[in-house]
Image (cartoon, rainbow, N blue to C red; front, side, top):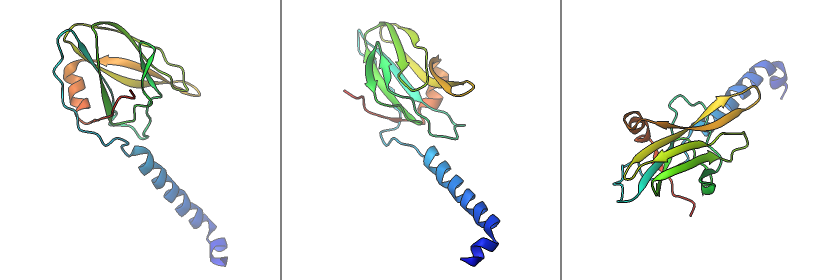
Length: 155
């Protein structure tokens, strides 16, 4: 015990490094174990909204809070590295999250037999980040979403 007192700076340094490694590996790990992305055929008279959370530069495993489409809660959370499929009718849809930080809804218009790709992103503010949703072009989205695993809808 006396050795720890003599070398307390080394002990604190080792403890700090251990804690940092422990937190980093826990935060970056993937939370989903579903199947890897496969595009679906869009049924006649319907549209498909893919909502995915992909960030190759993320140093933390942030996910969104509950995700809503037209004020109906679809899933409880969208962890980093995951996606879900929402088959719906063509038309206007509002997508937002009910995370602790304030977000603004995405006003989305979807055509018949159309597939759209939606992703969350954070706008950093002074004390917190704001979760927003954006739409990506299919070519760019397909490169990202193919790295994600599917999660099941809440209902």
